[in-house]
Amino acid sequence: MERIASVLLLPHPERDAPDVRRLRPNLETEATAMRIVMEFERGQGRQVYDVHEKNFGYDVTSLDLSSGELRLIEVKGLGGASGTILLTPNERHVAEDRRDCYWLYVVTNCGTIPTMQEPIKDPAHFPWHEVIKVAHYWLEVNAMTRPMQVRESKEPYCGNKT
Image (cartoon, rainbow, N blue to C red; front, side):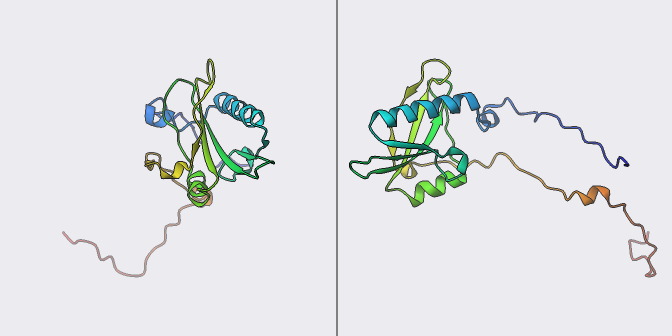
C-alpha cells in the first residue's frame, strides 16, 4: 500500500454566518416537529405515515378515512419562535405538482415548548426565494493519482519571441 495523497478537512469559514447556518438541519428540532405533527394528525382522526426517509418531497402522508382527504405534509421545525424555512428542490417540485393536497406544517419553539402554526395548504403559491449561496466542486479521484506526463514535442515552439 502506498500513500498517494493527504487531505485536510476544515470547517467552512462561514459556517456560523446566518445564511449558511440555516442550511444545516438540526436533527433534534426536526424530530420534535415530526412528533408534534404526527400527534396532531392522529388527533384529527387521520391515518398517518412517516415517509420522511423516502425522499418523496414531503414527510408525512395523512389520510382521512371518512372523507377520503389526502394530505402530503412537509414538516418544518424551528428551534425558536421565528426564523427561515427552506424547501429542497424536490419538495418545491412536489408542492407545485400536487397543489391540491400538499400542505406545509411549521412547528416553532421546538427547543422549548413546541407550537404548531396554522397548517398551510398549497405553499407553492408563496414567493419562495431561490438559494444560490453554496457552491460545490468536483474532482475525479484519478486526477490525484495519475502522474503528470511531460512529453517532448516534435513541433517547434510557437510562443512569443522576445
